[in-house]
Image (cartoon, rainbow, N blue to C red; front, top):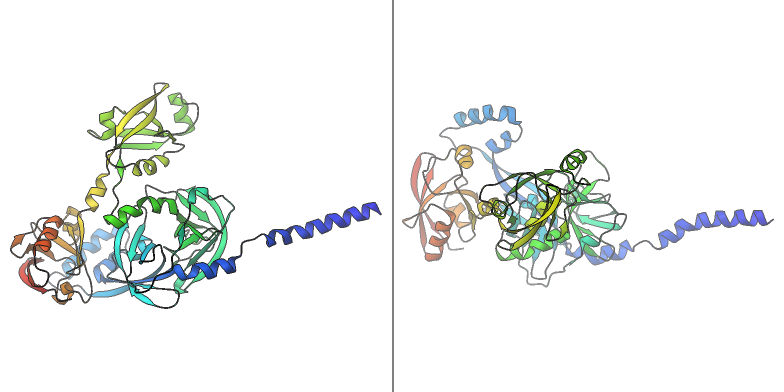
Length: 458
């Protein structure tokens, strides 16, 4: 009889455990109702020519041949153009209309439209981009106070914790999926600052840029990538990475990052043993750029960087992210392993060079065009004949620039009789001009040189 009672209690306990566990699960219904209004759908369109569309279909082995064929075929003729449309997601972070999403959702877009949960749509403008983290900050203008989300702390996320994604997969608006945090700190080869949250909450094309919430209704990640053909494997940018750069995106539109000037590699067990390091950790310096901050501070090839400002470097992937977060000009303590001993160096952090290059792109909203300084790659790809000037990379539909006939690939040589050699020249010339009068531009298109007048009456 006692044995029978014990068996009954054991069976009852087994049956009761799932019930108790389910009873403690998050109230996803309540969370969905609270959070959906601040999640938006993003649709974009951009003008693409037949050249770009066709080149994307060929691998690198055949691209040069078809590039030459295309240039010869369309020489002297206008290349056909068409509209490309794409969909993504985003979320409102301030009541005055700032929205976070992925850079790849809005990359090169001519038009960006944001649709709220209630169906209202607004045109959006890009206020800042960070291609390295794949983030974009958008802005919409509304007379209403917009619903917002709260940004959480992704460092506090635990593996196995419940999370919820809301987005626009395959154009299916306001889709909600749930799952758990499968892993943290994933490196998937997306960029130098890979540090993704992996989740099995269903993420599909169109979810990009949408929020990943914890059970307190806080955004802990930005859904960004999936494994092609995989199921239950999605990746999100930790929200802390976005919070670190948000002030820069708002104030300047781009991100300035720190730079040491070292090339690093992974420390294997064999390499650690050869250097006399007890465990495989840190970042092995394989080269030091001449004249760089690291060079000036005394770092050498063969040093193993163990910590930066007393933050442990467990793997080489930790170092770029930590360096990037240090303000340019600040002195950082770098601890290295050299000749069997730990040594400290003070390095004055420099500015990452490609960040400087990124500043050479300029948006001129008053005219409705974006320009970039002419690089050797742009000169070759667009067959630019102009000796100097800035090349137009995008023209906003229905803008003064579009109505005047300007198009991507045109080179602005002069603006109101002022020679233009850089984006700074054009910005300065625009500031000096009266925006309500007619502006005269000298344009080079192919081998032709001609004037265009733009009247900014918008």
